[in-house]
Image (cartoon, rainbow, N blue to C red; front, top):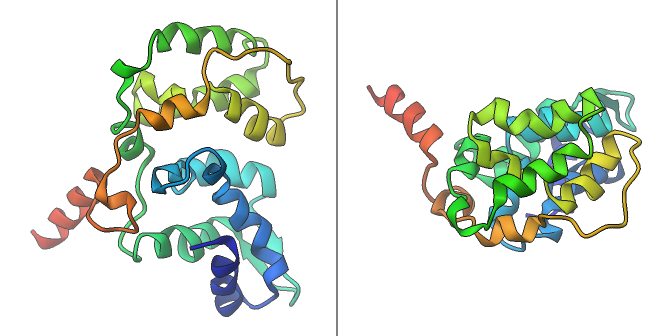
Length: 203
């Protein structure tokens, strides 16, 4: 589903116009520029909403009809859930568990090298380390310590200087070594986090 289709869902649910929502849905799907299949959906998580989307667009907007729209609700019910057949919202851990870090050479040293560049800025450090806090997995830092996240996302949140240098890691290296799972394919299957929820409901 593309940002226009998601925006149509938002208009039906919340009023306003396509233009009220298009850029937000486009931002949620901005990872498509670095991964053309559904592994790209790392922002289709609560980590993505809380750490990326809301810091960029705010926690609410007022649409063309004068109605207040909560961004968390918009992301969840108009974008993420429809992309997964309204079954579940995956966790960041679901994506991180699919990364084959053994295939990425010296990734820990590469992460450390990138992180050192921002070690004096506490807000930036907190964002860059947030996947580790969220998942408890060191390899989750591959999602924030790469040239794409630094240049494309971090700069949208914080006014930082971007150096014209060769980065130790590119996001392509991460996605190329991320296993494709059926749950990523529009909810054809369940990620581990959703399996536990569905099991508890049945029990």
